[in-house]
Image (cartoon, rainbow, N blue to C red; front, side, top):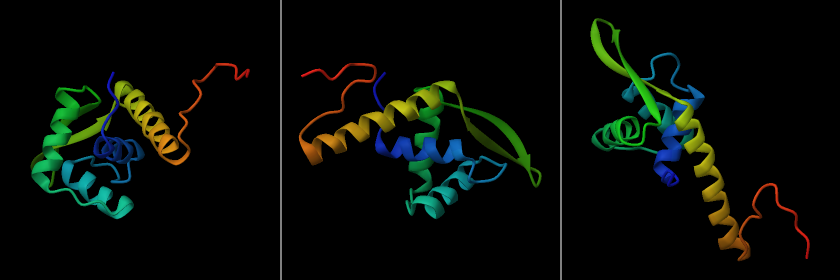
Length: 114
């Protein structure tokens, strides 16, 4: 599995944290992203990312809910999304370590015998 992009990691983290209360709609996710991380994504980009993360990457599930009589799509992270979030965290942490130290992270479960 390829690691999620930094933008996808941000979205997965916000969806996982449920910072947007119970709704989980794209509008609520966008507001939570801006309030919690200071990141603003245009609505078209946000919905394209959410749709791709549900349909193509299979990291999100959604359902149609009614809010004030209107139909809305609510998103939630699934098990594949949790794995992608962890893989992305590890991947980007390793990139940062390489940039700062010139060394990559030792693989988990390996012995460091030199």
